[in-house]
Image (cartoon, rainbow, N blue to C red):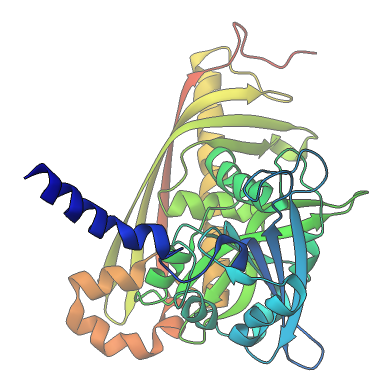
Length: 384
């Protein structure tokens, strides 16, 4: 019985010893892409810059003990697929996208091409994971991959970390993945906001992520940007504002800034249909502590009440400015269309075709309540 079992085990294991890699490819056939950047040439072709992991040292999988751990390639073609296949001409390996961390799209390409072209291409073949970070860049995207990382091993890791932490701790941008883009491109609100990256004016240039790039569907093209100062209030309106700093100008035109550190935020939006118009009833609650005082006292209960009222009025004003910016762009980034589809399907069926224009006429009322947990010090006045 034992001999028969051994013969069966030997027969079953032979393919594992003789067949090589199951996929038919050796590890050395692949170039593992860390980041990709898409731009348009002057002739309208697609220029793809890819950052590829560079294995060096005594073994194929051993990282380099010195020098760069990546190499950049640049290919041009009339299609994304053609540009990706041409990587082998320079690299000597086929690109493997499953380990890609970030996808950058240049502003010119984002204005001229539908974002759906990217989701279509990267969903096929040896495609990347849905967790790939998405960025729209000011200027050419390829220039970002030429920058050395500040603290991470590659600029791909640097950009992914910057996007996540800038969203989490400042709310001046937001994190966005390839999977989320694919899903949201099929939703009813017909607009998405992607992180907006810029090369700061320094030597060498530093890649920073602040603000948002607005993509509107069904065109799927970039129609404008939202500055980082407004991104905070869009995050608040979307009930995504977890923590961050609100800078409050001094009253009566005085110089200086009072800073309020938000530790908790909640926003509820209740759409109300009034005839042919939608009105948004917006209620926001903020809690936090004073982070800096330059022109205000908060020692007495009355002074704290005045500070809270002043901050609430300022936040209401900035939220209104942000909504007006979205109305001007006809970009429903507030999810109103999705609410109508779920709760008022008949009305949505009548309005969906011209929803961007209808959204530009939307009405709203904003009410903000501010709570102060701490003045941040034993004294609630500016330190001179």
